[in-house]
Amino acid sequence: MRYRTLGSTGLTVSEIGFGTIPILSGNVPVLPDYCSPTLPEAVDIMTAAYRMGCNFYDTAIPEEYGDAEYKLGVFAERIGREHIIIADKARAADGNDMFREVLRSAENLGTQPDIYFAHQVDEKNQDETFSRYGALDALCDLKKAGVIGYTGIATHYYSVAKRAAADSRVDVIQTSGNILERGIMERIAEEPLFRSKGLILNKVYAAGCLLNVFQPSELIGGILHWPFSCALIGIGTEEQADAAMQEEYPPLQFSFEDVTARLAERFPPIECDRCQRCVCPLGYEIHIVLRQYNYFHLGKHYWARKKLRMNIDEFAESCRRCIDRPCMKQCPRKLRIPELIAMIREMTE
Ligand code: SF4
Ligand code: SF4
Image (cartoon, rainbow, N blue to C red; front, side):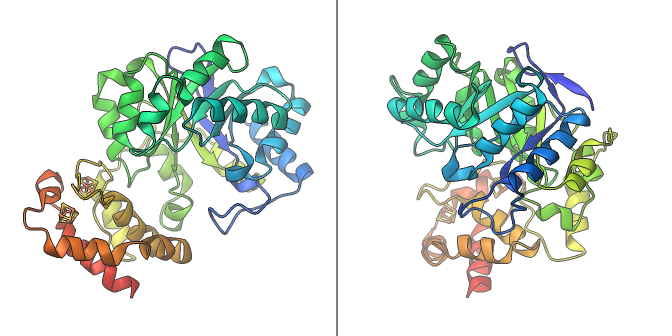
């Protein structure tokens, strides 16, 4: 295992971190295929990763990660709390709500989290999260009081990540990217504001989808040149821990075209890298819909189809009536976005 420095925190973190979604049990409607091990099994899996050099474990509140906080706390006590770094998170934009969530997390873990993220910060809840008495202020107060070590913002949106990078209250940013969905990370790599922040990367396997086409060595090796501190891999078995952590994978350079050519052996992919430069004035999240099309063809049939059906009729109709189509002018890949949305609508019927 190799190690990197986490921004200005002074922490040294393993290059590969343990994402606890696959070890959760409980009724959490995010993905249908969790491994859901028992408590002793989960502790053994986390221990196996630790023995391979992992020192970074990421979790979230019960509404999102079931009993993962509790399982992680039991593991931390068994292995020795001082040997690992615990990152936790809650979806709360209001300061009072965040305050309560952090205290609840500390109780579930049986210890204090090292880093606590405001989770799923998006374009709708960001103003409240960053405002006076919002979630970020609460995290700062909790840091001053010694309840958490460092503050964090977790987001899938480049605009929110950049706002966090410009905010001195934020220590660590967590965002998503992989060899296909590389747009956010490529923009982060170019933006100096991020250089003093710790950066945690998730969705390296794209919720497992990319494992149907690529090996772990390719998915991990292909991102190593990016400026993150720790890349989280969701681990639900000891075999998965072995695949992600036992090898020191060499860096690989995959061009975007290499990646889409591999996908094209299975289905015609939409060549969107989720750079998020396209902004629809009507508020449609183009990159999310295009991603779900690729995820659908990569095996997440039920999950992706459900998400695609949510507003695709209205979206396609708006595109049909749109005269200026500003999104197409903003797309560096020259994607014909309205036609792609119409094609996806047809596919979901
Ligand atoms: S074509 Fe118009 S309505 Fe459709 S995504 Fe682009 S900007 Fe939005
Ligand atoms: S459609 Fe184009 S601009 Fe929009 S996220 Fe995808 S690649 Fe970027």
